[in-house]
Amino acid sequence: MTGRLTNHVLSDEPPPPARMVAGAACCVSGAALVVHILTGSPLWLALAGLGFAASLAVVVVTAGDGSARRALAALARRGVVVGVVGTAVYDASRWVLVQVGGLELSPFEAFPLFGQALLGQSREGLLVTVAGVGYHVLNGVAFGVAYTIWFGRRSWWWGIVFALGLEAFMLALYPGWLDPRSVAELTQVSMVGHFAYGTALGLTATRLLPNELASRRSDG
Image (tube, rainbow, N blue to C red; front, side, top):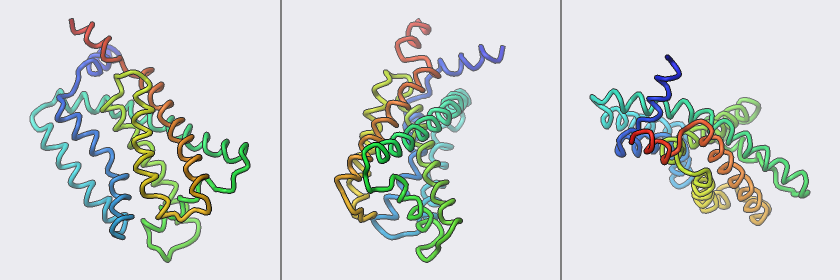
């Protein structure tokens, strides 16, 4: 009975406004980093402000529509799995590339910067690294949820398109923020990581969700 109910919820598509707003709300962590890089505002403050606004928007757009909330919740639960798998593949692919390719760039050098953005530029040590890793994981999983809500029922290669869109934003901002020793190595590692991330998102989502064509056939 539970399985039937879950499948029924997944076959229901949230209204486009609810889906767009909920997916955008899942991008808050990335948007907050953009605000931090461009304005110097504390990352925690940008996260709190944007998170509150996004949560309020989701509440407003789904007010009085219980079926939309249930459908979004079902997509979000599966999106967490999609995001966890994608983030693990993203980090593993970058680490393997650096090891095999003999690159000097550390694939994880942004972690302490994430931590300092959250806790303060003068902070150092294990707590900063832990905070940075936590933010990185939050980002990867949240983008996975956004992908699942927006494109999870589509063909797997939409995951690559989505991830390369994220890559474009990253390469527009990160070189000036990280000041890497080699922009070429940063680009190479980032491209490989995002391609792997997008592939993992797309393939995992297609395993967990009925695609659009199958949903239309079942509705008919």
